[in-house]
Image 1: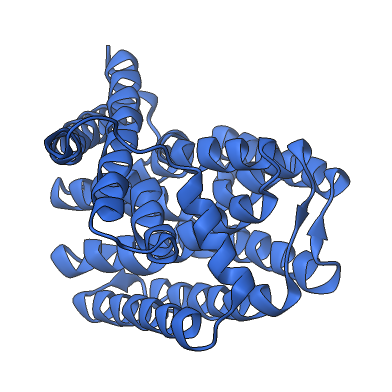
Image 2 (image 1 turned 180 degrees about the vertical axis):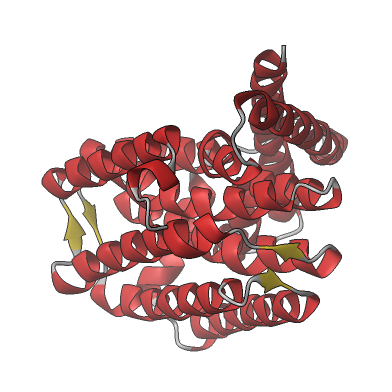
Amino acid sequence: MDYLILLVGFAILLGSAELLVRGAVTLARHWGISPMVIGMTIVALGTSAPELVVSVGAALSGAGGLAIGNVVGSNIANVLLIVGASAMIAPIISDPASFKRDGMVLSISSIVFAILCWQGVLSIFAGVVLLSFFMGFLFYSYWRETHQKDVKVTELHAAEDDEIEGIKGPLWVAVVSTLAGLGFLMVGAELLVDSGVNIARSLGVSEEVIGLTMIALGTSLPELAASGVAALRGHSEVALGNVVGSNLFNMLAVMGTTVVIHPISVSQQILSFDLWVMLASTFLLLALLVIRHRVNRFEATLFLAFYVAYIAVQAKGVENVFPAI
């Protein structure tokens, strides 16, 4: 029964996130907000909304391991699964100048997030630090795109906006859609957290493992769908932007908001294994894009193979595969 509830939770979560994004984008266009700002904020927020709602809900329910597992697992899935799947459809090519700045921000944010986790507890102070980094990133991005006239980045955010189809009909339909999407997000997240915790207990595994695998994969589906569609339409740079933006949002906004509301402890497995996998996959992607400025189908195959291996290790048990951890 818990598996059925989990699937229902995923379905509600995905449908409500889509409803929320389309409604919010429609309202933003009606109010004359530029495609650049819509792509940078609403689209990024909408695709990461499942991680935010699930992580906050898990922490408030006392399932802190599921909350941080969801974020770390989602970031790993974003790089290995989503970049891999998108690059299999069409090679991902990055603009060196634009990606150099975003890559630097992602590198620093990943290192700061890992250092805070390695303290053993993500406290309110850690949450404030993460949210401060996030606000700084938003202000810097907006300033850069409005003052430095970075045409490539502006076109990227405009393309992200173009990927979203608005709500047709009167304006009140968009308002209702936005509010309904937000409400159903809460419902889907609660179903997901409750069923995930029950499944973890029935299988005798930790909440972290469920968060790192099933929950993380489920909450990453909006990014997978958005990036896959973008790649099919020949907008591989949008797929890359989705991953970079989502990983930043997960670490800085999702985890920052979560631990400000409710501090959580970080398990030994995440400290000794999963954080290192997250960092290694992130820097592997960054190295490819800095050195070669592209991810071809060969690298995409490797990324997907790495993700399958990571899930296999989690299924068998990290402590069984790596006894020293």
